[in-house]
Image 1: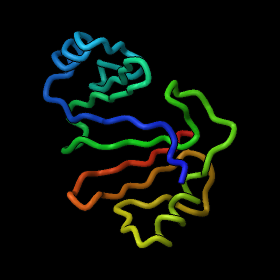
Image 2: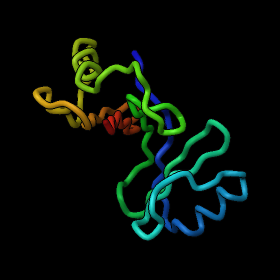
Image 3: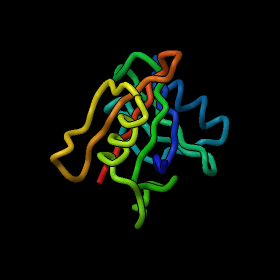
Length: 123
């Protein structure tokens, strides 16, 4: 199953303090808008998202159709196909994509410990 680029989306209390902390570890801002309380940061191939006040827990995030530089991939599995495959395998979906649409969509599942997993297709 091709899930796409992986990142960890962190629920942070103070985005400015978190940005400074991760910069100290060698991360550089890659995207986002600190004024809107979210940043995407990267250190080599490792991508993290910092999100203040947007969700309750840290989230494992996958982006079908993107590589680790947020560049479009020629070959990827559409989110709706991933959703069908997950359902066939018995996964419980917390949020589902509308299978009658095309383009951007997302689904959410949880692992056995309640950790949210977001599969978020941007194109």
